[in-house]
Length: 120
Length: 106
Image 1 (tube, each protein chain N blue to C red):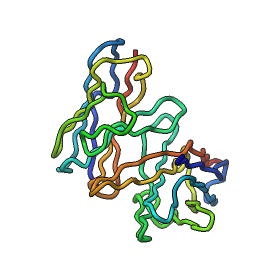
Image 2: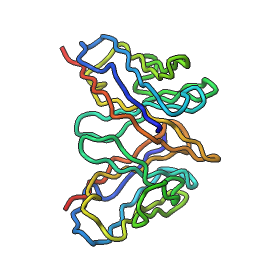
Image 3: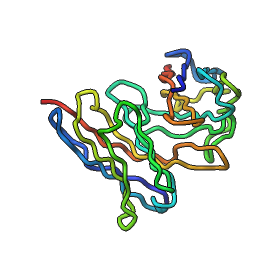
């Protein structure tokens, strides 16, 4: 069964750092495109970053230069290193597999999410 | 960035009703459009990809249509478990933008 389990969220002060992890099972993170998507309290979904299987990365403008997406093939885990955190980064962060069928891409499955709160 | 605009923001309906949610892209995205369902406190689930392809395991009462800039998600006969928030999302390019969501309420 394909499954994603996030961890690492919590309370952090503005300007601080946090590293989120996403442990995958049922497939290899190094052979698939992987993304992070976040959802602020009571708000909609916001795409954050993608790591393509060829190691190309992209980021939302709102996190560019502060967040870094990476993976560890030996641990079969995706990461999101977040630094210089701001209050507006507070959200539930979801890890998701970026499925590719021909030229079509979609997110499936999603992890359960890990909450991040940036507050003093 | 491509902006995705859903309408309506919220929708009240009854079990058995036929409902349609629309999604408009700020530029053409061909049929690179996905639909997700999210229930409170849960992660989103994929319903439709490439505008009209039903994801495995999704009931056939869900259907998607459209191409270019205008898209629609239709639920042919609402069931109690369909009351949720629905999001469209473009996969034409990055950033992979989502619509603001449509909350479907009883």
